[in-house]
Structures are given as C-alpha cells and as structure tokens.
Image (tube, rainbow, N blue to C red; front, side):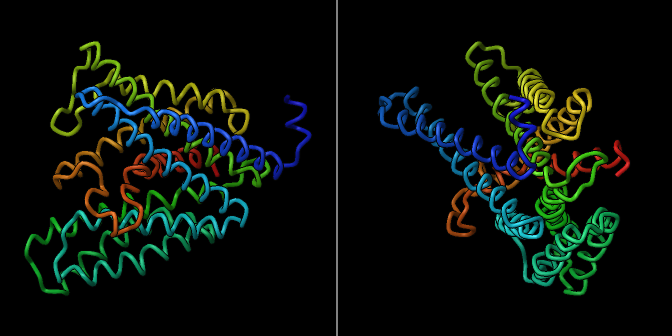
Length: 334
C-alpha cells in the first residue's frame, strides 16, 4: 500500500484523498437515509431520536459543503481556495452579526468589517504577507473599529457594541483566514502541493474531537456519570467527555502523521493543540449563544445567510486554525 501511495504524484495523492473523503460521506448519507426511513414512535425517546437525526443531517449537509469547498479550492489553486474561504467567512460573520443587534451608529463599522477588513485580511493571506496578516486584525482593526464607531456619535452601549463586532471579526474572519493560509506554508523537504493534507489533517482531527465529545457526553448521561462543569452554558460539557474527545482527535492525528510534514510525535502534539483549541473555542461560542438567548446560530433566520447554522459547524475550526497555524510556524521556524 505504501509503495502504491509513494508511486503517485502529489496531485494524484490529494485526488485519492478526496475520493476517499467523498466515499465516506456517501456511505454516511446512505446510512442516514436508511435510518430516516424508520419512523420513531411518538414517545420522548422517539422525539430524542428525531432530534438526533436532524442534528446528524445538518452536520452531514455541512460536511458535504465544506468537503466540496476544499475540493474546488484545491482543484482551482490556492488563490481560488482563499476566495472560497473568504465567502465562508462572509456568511459566518453575517450570521454572527444577525444575532448581535446593531444600531444606526454601527453601520459604518459594519461596512468597514465586511467590505474592507475581510477582503484585506484574505488578500494578505493570498499574497503570503504573513507578518502583517498576523497582526492586521488584532492590532489595527481592533483600534480602527471603535474610532469609526465614535465618529458616528452614538455613545449608547458603546463598549458592548464594539466588543461584539470585534469578537465577530476575530472569530469569523481572523480565524477562518488561517485555514487557506495552511496551503501556503513551505516546509523543508516537503512538496507544498501536498499542503491540502495539512488542511485535511486539521479539519478531521477537530471534527473527530467534536463528534467523540458529543457521543461521550450522551453515554455518560445515560449512565448518570455526567458531571457538568458549565450547566449554564452547555448541557453536555464535562471534563471527562472533553478529554475523551481530545484524546480521540489526538490519536487520530498521530495515525495521520504520515500524510503530513510531521513526524509521529510532532503529529500528536499538533493534533493535541488543534483539538484542545477547537473544542474549548466551541464552548466559548456556546456561551456567546446563550448570552443572545439562542441555541443554534442559525435559529429562526434561515433566509438570512442561506446556510442556517453555518457558524455552528465551523466555530471550532475558526478557533483551532490560528492556534494550529502559529504553532506550526513557531515550531518549524517557517
């Protein structure tokens, strides 16, 4: 098997990765279709089953969309991949802002965020200006947004309004921009045309962590062993379930080390960093949703973005990507 894989060109290896990925998604979709043909009874257990099926349908639908975005981005080159992730960031930020009420005095800041900050951040990504790309939003935009808001002469809840917008930009734009940036890293003795594996590595370990954490919390709840640490924010978060998810994602990362520039120990360490950052970031986003009195980000606003709950699907990735990217750059001196 290894001989066969090594005989393929980098492009063929990445192509094979997408064949396997879409094959797994097709199998999962078929299994979900068969499961949905069995009508659950009208009991509390049946309602729970229907809710679980609905959750998996949403997750699977988003997985198809994200896999297609990855594939189209890879097929059309790094520039198009950056553009596609910019579109995802645009819709995610729109979803975030929709649940964070704004006032007339915020309009100029919103225009700045959507039509200046977002394009500039992804332009810096595509042109590999990594030093400025790293500080553009945390430093310059952090100062610029309040200045523009102050010029609108609206002091009502000034700090709260600006903090919300800055949070949205940090998570949706800054975080998401680090995903295509992974395609542009240049490792010693590694063909950069295979950097799609790096994006796949990040996405699959984070997603695995979230799924295993979810399943572990359900199992612990059934056994009455779930000791909630944050009942006001999450009805399922416990350290035991969190550790199970992070452990599963880390082990998977170690097993996938061969498709990355990492050695086995490095792959374990990088996967641990990504899984911890992504899962804890997801908890932070839950706290923000509870603050707004919402369950999913897309609740009741399907027509706003056309991708209800998109931010729910990518929030962990938005937190994991910058931590993973800068850890890799720091460790390998890139």
